[in-house]
Image (tube, rainbow, N blue to C red):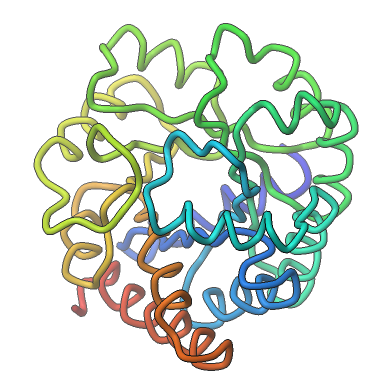
Length: 271
C-alpha cells in the first residue's frame, strides 16, 4: 500500500484497536460555497470524525435523498467544479492530516478522464474514491489507475446483494466496503435495523477489509447501535441538514462540529 490509502487503513485499524468503530462523515464539496465546504469538512474532523467523504455534486444523484440533493443543487448553482472538489480534499487533508475520500458517480470521472482524475486526487492527498454506481465488472480501468496512484476503491454493497456477488465485490475493493444499511436513498431514519447487521456479517465472511455502514444514521444512539457490529459508521444527511437548517454559515459549522462530537461519543459507546 502506498500514499493515503495506507493512512485510511491505519486510521480504521487504530479505531479497531481502541475497541470502537470509526466515524466517517459525508459532506458535499461547494456547499454552501467552496470555502464554506472546506470549512465544513474541517469542522467535522475537528469535532471527532476520523474520515470524511467529500461528495462530488451531481445533477442526478441516484443514491442521495432529498437533503443531499438540496445541497448538491446549491453547490451546482454556485458553479462547483471538479477542481473545487480537489481543492476541498487538499485543504482539509493539509489542515487535519486525516484521510479524505471522494464519493462520486462514474459519469463525471469518465468525462474528466480516469488518469487525470486519479492523478489529481492523489496529488491533492486524497485517500481514494467511493463509486456507488460503478459495476465491479466494468471497474478494471478505474482500478488500474487508482492502484497506480495509491488510491482506495470503495464499492457499495446492499442487503439485496447475494453472497457470491459480495465475494466478487470484496475481492477487488480496497480501503473498506460501504454497506448500505437498507434499500433506498440516503436520509435519516428512525431505525437502522437488522438488515444492516446481517449484511455486515455476510460481507465479513468474504473479506478481511473493514465493513462500514451508511444510510440512515443520524444520532449518537443509532451510531452506537451500528458501532456494535460494523467497523465504521457513515453519516451524511444529518450533517448536511445541520447546515441547511442553520440561520447562518457560522452556526452551520458549529452544528457540524457539535454533531461530530456527539456521534464520536456514540461510536465509543458513550451515547
